[in-house]
Length: 186
Image (cartoon, rainbow, N blue to C red; front, side, top):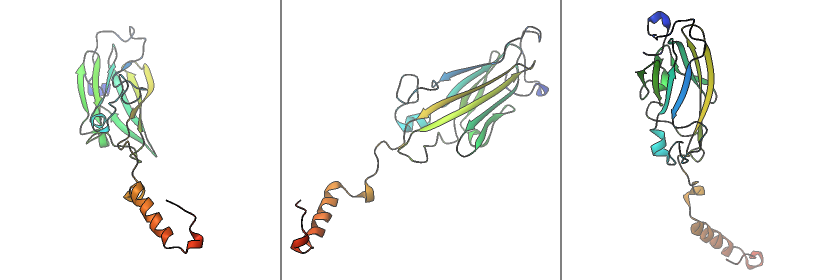
């Protein structure tokens, strides 16, 4: 079974419409949403490993899935990740959909791996919203967030200079001043 429109004939199940009173199930397999990078269940603490790790989700229902929409709440816009049985945009290469009993397992990852935060010294939060409707109209809407580690864990030195270089420059500049202005003693 895959996820998609019932009119495409991509749903199945053993229960009848009158048996299905519950909404589809969304199970986060890994990494666990809401867990800090490096903590058990979360993304790895190092960015290179975390950036290549997909978010694995299983979406299932007794009677089958009619519509599944996944969006990423980003800045500044919301981005469609998955719709009508297909990954979209920057999620088309690297993401996969595997049929399982009652639905599908999705491995979600941006093409080329997860991008770092705009400021590489900051962590990036990935927020996905899942809107899923089964073949009899039961619906579920869930939002989950994951945190990627910062790409660079140590902030860059201003101007690329070391503290020793900056102290030497300051000392040289002070030594050029007339003696009455020299109150700095390195």
